[in-house]
Image (cartoon, rainbow, N blue to C red):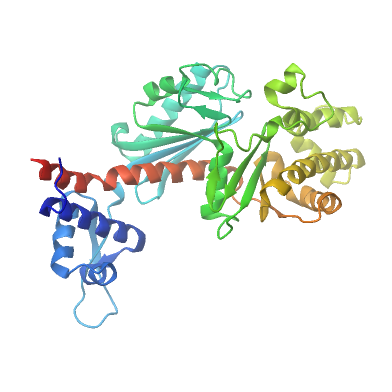
Amino acid sequence: MITVGTPSLLRAINERTVLDLIHHQGPLSRAQVARVSGLSKPTVSLALGGLLDSRLVREVGRSRGERGPSALLYELNPTAGWVVGVDIGRKWVRAAIADIAGTIVARRDERARVASAKSLIGQLGGIARRLASEAGVDWSQVTHATLGSPGVFDPVHGYVAMAPNLPGWGRSGLVQAVRDELGTNVSFENDVNLAALAERTHGLGRNVHDFVFLSIGTGIGMALVIDGHIYRGAHGAAGEVAYMPLGKGDPRDPANRRRGAFEEAAAAAGIVRTARRLGMRAPLTPERIFVSARRGNAVAGRVVQAEAAMLSLAIATVTPVLDPEMVILGGGIGRNGDLLVEPIERELRQLLPFRPRVAVSALGDDAVLRGAVAIALEVARDRVFARSPMRHAQAATA
């Protein structure tokens, strides 16, 4: 049992205080740390000594431009830990490795091998280990990995539910199979939630307390950011708007129950069906349809208008409940803001007396990946930053 107030425990607390300060405001000198933290200079010196011994901080040159002699500066040692973020989609697997300071050192984008869960899991293992090799570290040095994919992670049964676009991804035991393949600490998160987290940190969601991220591509999903935090709901399914009963088909139809009526109508396959119904000729893809609309093709323009109307209905359904300040569009289809934003806003003016601002993500294909890296860093930093304090706390139990 740790006795409160023992010298070892107090030293551990001081080390964590100094480490957090250097991480957020570094590089800093001993005097700067003491001034900002309120700790005495001898206490700061003792804490820095422990952090240097633990290789959690390192010297990084000397201060310049201040009165008096220059002073040694300290920063977080970026090689104290490593993280991997992975974005798993129907078409692409995107992955990156970053040091504990958050600098991405290597990245890989590969066509997803989605024939089966086994092939996709094997691909994840291969990508992860190649990334570590490119970063010059052994895979065993990776502190944490975060994987983002469609669906809802079920921690009780160890699978990802509601991910019909990834064959086999919903089978029991999938999570353990991924962890066995990677052999490191792994967390799972919904891909659209990760994109919203990236927007909150790096994109349009900065300084916005309440917004939603609506991703439209092969599938459809929404992330809800309320008071600056992701809202997941009682079962982790908040934002699974694919299952809203919108569209022309019967929402109780088995196909709609599996993928969701709104996804069937407004995601990639639904757009192609609309284009075919209106007379556009094959080969048809959402990309071709939007390109044709930009070139003035009247039928393609009608397809885009129909898609904007569907998206407007979804936004109008959510807005009176959440009252978001902003709706950020993302995904391969959602990024066509030059064609979608104006008709969506026009529809919303007819549907609602109050409307959120509609904008398109500037993070592009990197939104989910950047969110995965950010979550992995949060977990890894807690683990790595506890390394030195735990050493002293354990000593206090002796």
